[in-house]
Image 1 (cartoon, rainbow, N blue to C red):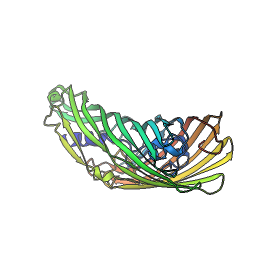
Image 2: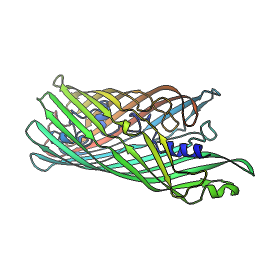
Image 3: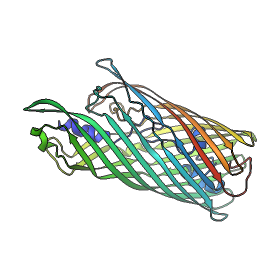
Image 4: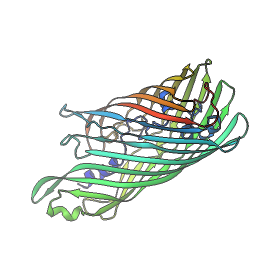
Length: 419
């Protein structure tokens, strides 16, 4: 019992990793950038550069960009022992983003980002094969990021931002119990709030009117859960002392650091290409620990190995100025998984993945722009046996995510630039 309970509690804090980025990241910041394969490190378009590369704010027109996506993941699991297929329950999530960029003077820009880099979940039907590992997980994380950039010359700038994060996680699973009253099934629910701090920084070099390059760094953010609620339901009276009704837990989930490099090149007066390369240092996430306020023979403080590997992603995007009132976009990406063989689980059914994106922007007014995006991601089949839980089978995930946003521009209009 101790191993089964502790293993799930440790694994369950994680987010479904097969949602848009390797590990448990979600890459849905900026509707224009999503439409171009989520590129933006070396291509400063709008206020969303606060996230991609804060140094680029001085090369983007001042304004506000807001957006929302409908995130619709679907996961299937083929049980290796029974050949039974289980499909996750249909759910729709709505990650949001709000970015602002204002020029304080000719050299200094101030920006602010409020966005959800982590915010998804997964739910399986009752009585499925892995119900003693996971039934449901929901996670919501919000980053608040004030940012400054400084132009050191007409072509080169640097920038940095402070990140404050707030998050919430909820998890549920069934719990098999045995007592002198016989075998029964109870349930356990975890509910906790977490917070952490970090920063991002970057450099941006506008080599020419056609060519720009950039580099950016996102620091690790340690999300600390303090006094989260651990609730046990339907526990037989004979075992109630092993599962206190009012129990709490604390834990820490490290969100890894990342370095990114990118460039953009204007192929023609209307067509621009952008390329980003991301390297995420998942190797720092090797163990996940839990500390319970009240322990028992069945519920002890525990450590669970994760042994993640560093993972990279390559992203490509194109933007075409169809007219003075319409921009069209397309992109693609390949994203490695940090999850090693033997550690794939229902809450993290991850694999190397490929994604395709489309997007468009329509000028509604001289200063108001409608931004649209569409993302499709395919996470190929991965046949695994989990080393801790023994769950054996094949996971496959697909993600569909349309998005919409509005950009309001400050200052004078240029119908061919900063749109």
